[in-house]
Image: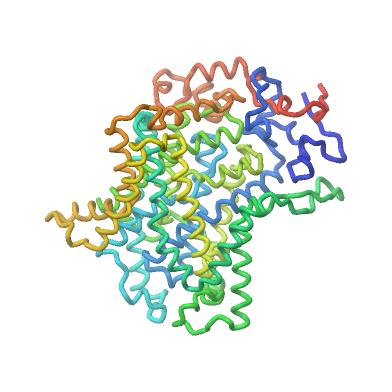
Length: 621
């Protein structure tokens, strides 16, 4: 069976009133060339999948895969670049943009590897992997220990010689300590995934645990963001204004763009460019303004002036110093070291990352037209994320990896849920990680532009955490107390410990370090208190939000049999490795689903035909 679209003007189901969409003729190409067959369960048009341009098993043309892959890279760009730039100050690298560019390139490269692993072997949903803010708070807490505080001379740009062995050892020993802690803590995540323990943990983790945990990821970072923005509030305010303008006021404005559908067949279509790239556009325009102010010498040229870091040439040498090609490799900063304090702190971030990722899996499944992920797929996804953190630690990115919520939102915007697009995005990340000039370019972003971007980004992260309260009854004094108590103590305890580290002395140095890292990590303090109070203070399942929490997972419309999406690739578990002991593994596909998928493979495929309005497709058998 083959579906074709007549040439000429795109029909309404594809054109969407002139707004740019992918060519519909590529719907004829399905994964493994499987035929499209209507499904009896597809009558519900309320499903998000009924509006997809490409479903999870659809295979868009290769050029569209590359285009959408680059778009996903650009969507994740802000978060990917932000993590190394946040860590740079505590790694003593604020005056070494060249090394910052190496860290950016490394996190690009590792994110590409982890994305491909997740799509092929993990949860198998179109979900991008990248650096996680959940690891930032415990990393900064560890680096704030007296043993790891940067020497005063590294904070003065006039005293820093970035090529000196003394300076190189100063920052490398800190990142090696981060590497070791991340690698050991990631083993916990791998174990939780492979053992199926995540399902047991989710019985006790509800919205009142997740809300303070995610909210307190960003709240402690506002002070650092304000310091960066305060270098030049005018430029920072412009960056904030442009992000708000593009993402909120102009998000529904479609801009005409040229589109070529074939040789000498070009037309114009409308594209919601402000909705898709608000941060990137704002960053580039503010960057351009800084360049104009630099060449006109409006900004001071003296390195000692506070506004000097707003100049585009304050780090301009990094572009000429950075190599065109640089291949990141494991152990590039030396042999990782491990401390118990760092491991326990990162484990707190691992737990937060796992809980958030499970929610991301369900959201991604809804937006890509897939059924809710079964337990074995979730277990594989968590274990692969743990493996990704292990690889990120080995490569020395200074961070771990997790599922990117921003890119899940992009699925809803672009209506492209194809798994092949994320494969292309993973390949784009690998290529960008190898090009040294790419990371160097982002390392030259003026500091106030970064500060303005961070202020908006951290605000959104805090709001995402608070949004989890929509599932609980906020008319309940119990819930108000738990959330308010968790937030206030999650801010108060770290603040007090940072000001009075000498008061936290047990006589055991290792225990002192562990306590200081955990108690200065706001997300751990708030999340732990939320978890403890929510599971000990009496309250009904409905009051705690657990019923609504479960219902959103069950209400996802099933447009495709789970075994078609979540089974292992290349016939693992169906054509080989079918022994009974393998099927008992928590991460192995359930045998009944696999057998059913072979018997009913035709009727159970994602059918684009049933989603298209009548007359949109010309069917030829």
